Image (cartoon, rainbow, N blue to C red; front, top):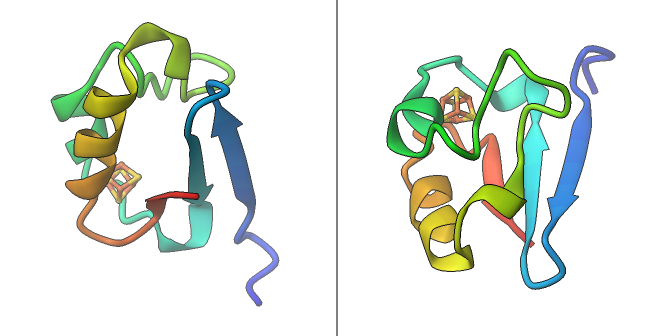
Length: 71
Ligand code: SF4
């Protein structure tokens, strides 16, 4: 595996979002679709507390590369 491919998990106690950096093509879709959750300039860059689980699942489903998934 590419040493730059890190996997991070973010949970709101209901769902867990998995982000695999090596798959991310930086299309920005997630940021455009749900900017209150996906904030590339903040740390951590995914803040699940800012939206409902349904909104998050919908935005994750629009990631074109599969970098984002729900566990
Ligand atoms: S939508 Fe997916 S591929 Fe695009 S920036 Fe977000 S995580 Fe990366």
